[in-house]
Length: 284
Image (tube, rainbow, N blue to C red; front, side, top):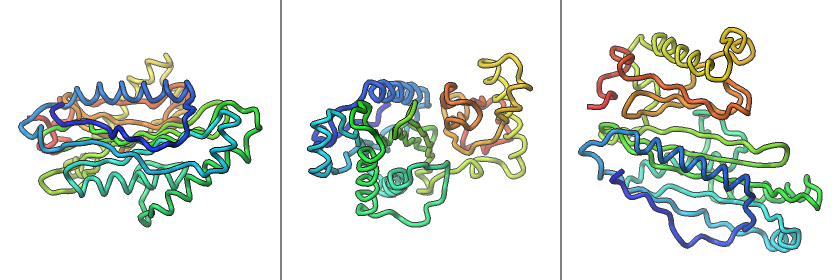
């Protein structure tokens, strides 16, 4: 992409013991995001967004730093904020990031009833960190992890595409990843949702196309679609983004499949979306 994606190099001291599981998860997400970024179409609008990230300035409390250093299992806190040349985009994304940090179990498009202050964010992280030493035995070697990262995915026509990736681990067999897409219209300076993209009256048709994509995906994990559907029925997610080939629909863990199946992606090509989504959302 022509947009500049870079991270600040002066990262504040936080927790230093990132588990191998966390490293692998972050690498996989980075690869997936990079592949999607290269998939979106290039237009004359390519230089309109300059994107970077900044680290949340947070330090482990001194008493926690002392204890976790002795145990060699300091909690990992890695929260980044978006910084672009469009303040209104920064505001929407970073407000959502604060929501992710303060609410341990975010849900897609959940309304933000109030903007969380930096004091709210610090308090939430403090509680997250302290809970590790209350809930976990002293010899536990897998530290708690909280990772939130915004990513610029590129653009289609006049629409700029972003996502927020988050991951939290609070014990148990595995942590929990979460992904949420964002589409921004630079011409109107607004966030675009799925309903904004659809031609009036065409949501049932879009849902039918998504269901077809769901059945195609199910066949990659189970030969019997009808049997699979009894346990993991189809639902329409509004967590969508644009690519050069069509619309991708991202599902969270446990939405339409067990944890082992990851975060399913359903794709609907533009060739099937003629008359379903507004023409301005189809690459020129």
